[in-house]
Amino acid sequence: MKVLIMAGGYATRLWPITKNKPKPLLPVGNKTIIEHILEKLANIKYPIYVSTNKFFEKSFREKLSKYDVELIVENSYREEEKFGTIAAIKNAIETIGDDDYLIISGDNLFSLSIEDFLSRFDEVKKTLIAVYDIGDFELAKRYGVVVLEGDKIINFEEKPPNPKTTLVSTGIYAFPKEVISLIDEYLKEGNKDAPGYYIQWLLEKGIEIRGYRFSGYWYDIGSSDSYLEALKDFLKETQIEEIQISPYSKIIPPVIIKKGAKILGRSIIGPYAYIGEGCIIENSDVSDSIIFPGTIIRNSTIWRSIIDEKCEIRNLELRKSLVGGHAKIQRGD
Image 1 (cartoon, helix red, strand yellow):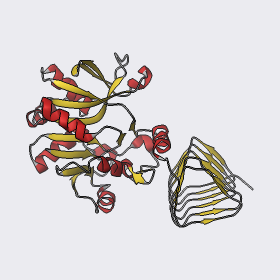
Image 2 (image 1 turned 180 degrees about the horizontal axis):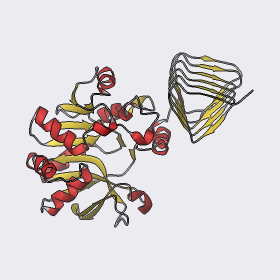
Image 3 (image 1 turned 60 degrees about the vertical axis):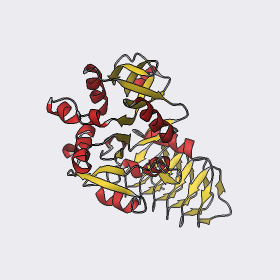
Image 4 (image 1 turned 90 degrees about the vertical axis):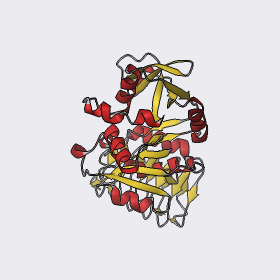
């Protein structure tokens, strides 16, 4: 078996934050998304590959240099050129060969035990999909919706307008070699280049697919809301590195404050705040927010917002905002 983490998207729904940084390398707690996934794979003895694109290749090589993984790089530099997920899987297979495959979406955070999932795959020797009950029919419209009979999938519908259940596919798949090899046929028929439609196509061909239900948590980091909710779930303990902090400032846990940050004046940080390296926060309140390195915030209130690196925010109240890198925003003194 080979393990393939799909990390080739451009995450346009999170722009401008992800315009120059790949979504799997966004921090959640004290690790990036892809590091959380790799932690889940720590006891798996199969070779691990990460599929990405030319534009983000350098970022992944730098971040993953300490991990025993191999990059597979598709030849694209922007959204309009990118492979779809199924074409990217085909590209990976052509590069590293046919085999059984464990495929994981690189923007997933999940409580699923990969060991238990693969143990079940070894038992059934059928395509196996990790499924999660999100408990909301409106939310289910965004995903591939599964209908189970026992653990057998009898219906799968990608982004249905009227979901039959709230049980959804989580972007974690185990494919036997003989099923993964059908991808070329699927693409040659001109089908949509997305995993959910491939699953539908397999069912229509009479191929048996099983579902593996898990509980706990699952986050598909597709929007600022889901990103911030994941931060709250993963940020359980306060971690403060070497920083400068005013005696008049207050820290409300849990928070992460990275080295070189300066918390000045009468500032309040937290709860649920991530402050990157070298940030300066002065006479400001920051909560339920992620502030990337090198950003300066003065005389402002930041709530449920994501502010990219090297920004300057002065005299503002920002709520539910996304601010791109190097932005300078201020209200007159």
